[in-house]
Length: 207
Image 1 (cartoon, rainbow, N blue to C red):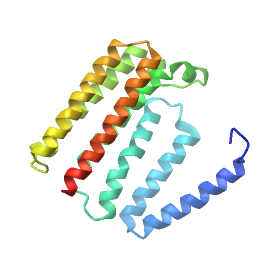
Image 2 (cartoon, one colour):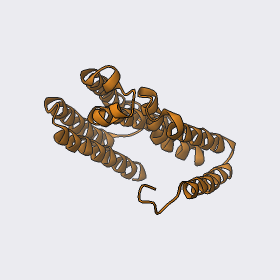
Image 3 (tube, helix red, strand yellow):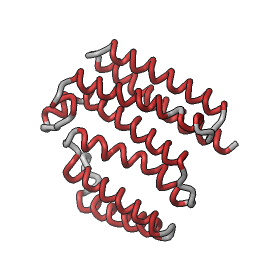
Image 4 (cartoon, rainbow, N blue to C red):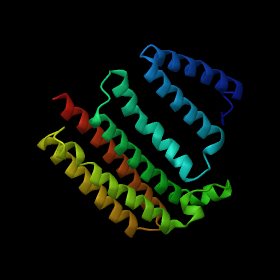
């Protein structure tokens, strides 16, 4: 759209078509899957329409949209168990933490568009403390699949490496406070860490 190669009407039309196809496909998976897909669609549309600059609420809407992929997948195959729910929660917490950190890094631009991010409303330190607390809860919850016996030592070794990486990155992030480029580099590594965590989980479950 910014380049002018796509018009607003074309974007709206594409959104309608893809939304219809997506919801129709979800309907074939059963009523629970359709309802979950519809809720996710409403959350996504609401975020883009009105809540992008709402601060924590907007962050939670994005995190929900990420984490619901686990829940929807489990529901779609009729296996919505404790392990699936736990990983949905982990994805929610991880993404919410990163959204709050990104609010710190984007504070200058967010202020110009009157965003109500945690960093702008309560300050940079408050946002970093909240994000760190959420990452700490992620680390604690990440051990549940092992403690409950859902997954074994292979998972324990993998998640321990992920948790150590998160701790190191958080310490580095807090010690490089104010160095935007360095902070963005660390956040990118956090995203990579989560991606490796998901891939490792899928490999472990498959074998």
